[in-house]
Length: 208
Image 1: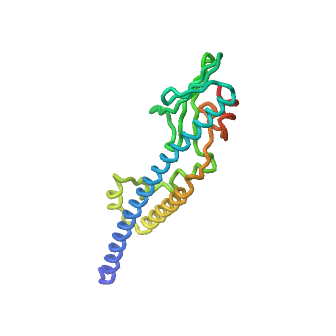
Image 2: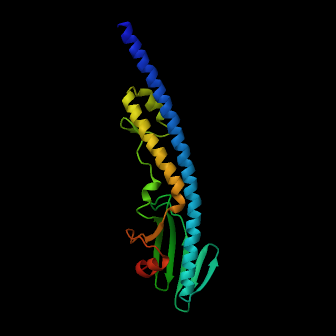
Image 3: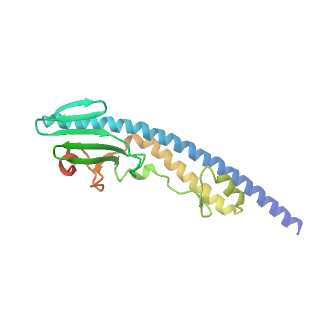
């Protein structure tokens, strides 16, 4: 092999190593901002729960129901009906971390339903990465990134991955700045395609 070819190969290997290191650093940055975003989501959902429960109690009071709290359960009743409303988590149900679930039970009508509070469809994309991060055909995570980088010898592939990571980071930064402006809407498991803006609308149209 000619010296110039050896030099070119050595230069390529050097550039490949630098790109791999840059990719690792940027991926770590992505995970950090993603963790910060997850924490903000949890914090924001506390406000969402508080506002929803306040709105539900106000609705029941306006409908002349006697309302009280039993622990974390909202009880609303009159001489004919008894309503129980409470926040809950169910391992068997598929739902996103940016959603809140409430169980509502109305007796003696035997109504049992699940209320789903989630971002409206216009804001939903804020909560997901813009790109799936892959090297070749393998989706990258904390466990396999080093092994996948080890076998990758394509500079163009690495540059494309870095670009996708940058897009994810920028997307999450924008989402972080706007998370307080997300509009949450109400639906039920039965009517999961509706987007009710108020508890009154949800209760009167879709709780059955």
